[in-house]
Length: 394
Image 1 (spheres, rainbow, N blue to C red):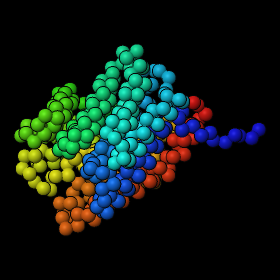
Image 2 (image 1 turned 120 degrees about the horizontal axis):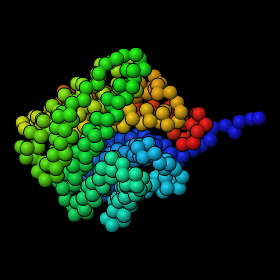
Image 3 (image 1 turned 90 degrees about the vertical axis):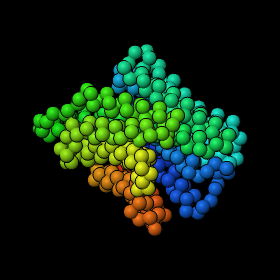
Image 4 (image 1 turned 60 degrees about the horizontal axis):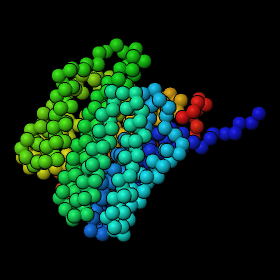
């Protein structure tokens, strides 16, 4: 009997449309930003291009990846049925509506822009919230993260509608802080757990150290950093807390045996992403305390270095595991990891090392980013849109 062939199932599980959408938007969004940056055009009316770029990387790219992660993790956390079908299609369309709205912001009244943009995260919260609250799952604070991100988005929209672009920049800064807090919490679980599992499979008996005091200081300092950024981002306390957080993250990471993971790209990429947290926070502390120009790009250390690399690492791993494939990435994905990390290095340190070639460093970082995510799309689009290889649902 002949096989019907692979089935097209892009909405069979939560990670599928959003890990694909995040990858597509990573390429399209940065390509559009570079065109705007180089051409000097302002296609978004009175909205400054840098605010469009920051917002869309946060709420287009990063929030798509967060949605894919939560829609996949919550069923595992609660033992409930995975999200699929019509609700997932509607959620994806709401995310797309926000992207289209911001791409045409110059032609939309502020109210329409707000309606299109602010519908996505409440729907995401509703979908995952039913399972988390019904099971009284310990991960219900994820709902608070979603709600806070929604509130920051509304804050940003209010600021640009009022023409207060300084306030809009502050909103994005706080949003980045919330994302870093999420990486701190989730990364603090998955990175050591995945590392321990990988080392055990290779017969390496090492202890992954987790110290309660370090955990508390790391998370508390990140919560405090977000709060300070919301009310007094240039106060001396912002530098002090960032410095404490950088040290705490570095100490935390030191117990995770990072160097033992170099033989497995699917694991070391998570460590490489996490190491950008102490780097980015240290740069933030130095810049706020001294005004040093070479530390000015600390936000890109946290977004390109930590957030984007963690997204690529988690997405490539989760897609394999939830489609019945071995947890071994191809050589091409290993190259994509390296290219994305190089993009972070160039974007963060290039402007200071080569000040006369500022535009060239931005272009180089963008090209490295685009190539990395293009490789991801070429390899993972079939994985994300076709049926599981083991014949199971999902």
